[in-house]
Image (cartoon, rainbow, N blue to C red; front, side, top):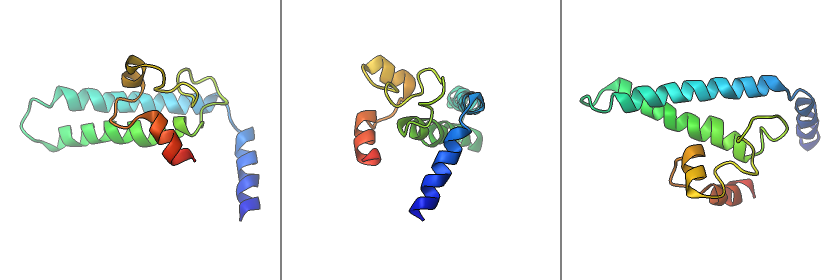
Length: 114
């Protein structure tokens, strides 16, 4: 099993390209749309649209952006700030703009990556 997983990793590594960055940008666009819809409808009484939009925003930020970034999934492509060596690290402004969440990215990296 370990050999198969290692071989698959090497094969997938060869396929890393700008298509990965395009896919990330598409996810970011949908995530940001969900955030805009959720935040702009929070004034309304409790409704499924706001709940779904805010949930999608949070879920996408955690599972599709931060998770892959902190694992180094975009380290081999030019994805701007989305690399494990600088994502949400350094100061409060960077942390809030990259990953506005209660969990410190440094703590996530230690607990999850090791």
